[in-house]
Length: 574
Image (cartoon, rainbow, N blue to C red; front, side):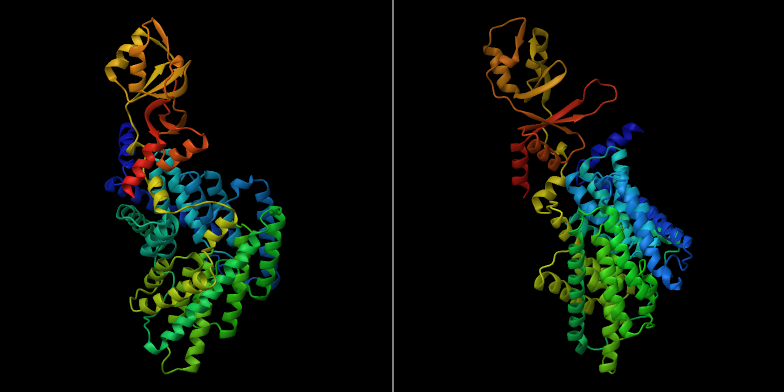
């Protein structure tokens, strides 16, 4: 079994190993689908403790005082629990995933995943305003990353596993596998490659199959057939996109403003956020939890226009403050509700003003959902595909694209707002570059360019040590003393020095006046990005690629990579 795993690891070091990565996609999809179903069920169980029915959605039926007390109590308990954790263990959600993909090369820790699972389920089950999709992305990515770490898979494959977990979580949550694939590539991986798409597609399909098999897996929302009634509505559709773009701008700015207080004690910060959410929920209980029950009511025209606007405004404030305060909740679901409320209000107004030309308000609701999601996440393609998959109709694509583009242009072009996760990463001074150079370095394994013609040589070289050295003629020699690796020298240079030196039973190489290369230690699983970072952090000139061994007394040396070899590789590929 160990031999097969080693062979599989070797296959994954090549990014073009489509079959190996396809297997990774299936496993990743099944794992993420199962963890999402468990998370959703946990939310239902927590909500049931407070007497909330309808699968953890019917907070409106609670007594009015509970609308205030439940979010406040939930936030305080969550804050007290967070206070027991280190600050790095509190980080959750998409921001955590993106940050770790760059700074830790796809290694997501189990502690943060547990905090996300338990804290997210408790927060959403206690009526705090948020969504399950952001936590789902974290959980799906984390369970896959942990599987990869446990199997010792190379770092470049961990990024693919996280993308598979992202696609699987979105597919399992909404039964929208295509939108899950595009969301993973558009938001998390931030690049499109044919090889990268295949395992992610398989993951989305696998997760969707798990959801349909174990949870019934029907459509999240029951919708009639919809289409645009008249092309004369297009200016109004653009106005809908503009309105959703404004809502996204407000949402992002409130979240960024709240995040400025991240230095405040976590219990006080969460408690204050809980009080604000509780006060809003006392007046507008529809904002509690995820809000899909309210979204269903809006889709069926059971909420008045004025109340739709009030719900949208309250949901913007409640969710943005919760997310900005650092609570373990997501923002995709709430923004679907915000967009639905804006679309529903404008749809009803349109029917009143021009009844003979206006489309069904449900059409506007769905377009609003995609527009708000696309603007806040800066994921227009994923938002458009989500709308198409939710409606099972391609007819809606043209007006949806127009509104989503209008929303993104409003947010990005007019008000210069980044996606919320990008804005918060920048505010927290986290560097997550997604340029082609970094993408290439992250997805390329060190084995692709390392020079394996390297041997260890003792600092005191005896006649017995000279013979294999002369026969092998290595490109690099790693000089060691008393079991400690000191520095690298080029094999040709060392052999020339030995040929010129006076023959003696023991020659001290450290006396040689030849070029020495300082070294950094890099694991065999590393990517070129990790190797280059290690060289930079340790102010070294080359990286020695090691593999830890259970039997050998010291790490096994596999090869050498220099800064120059990395630069030469990237210049040839870009």
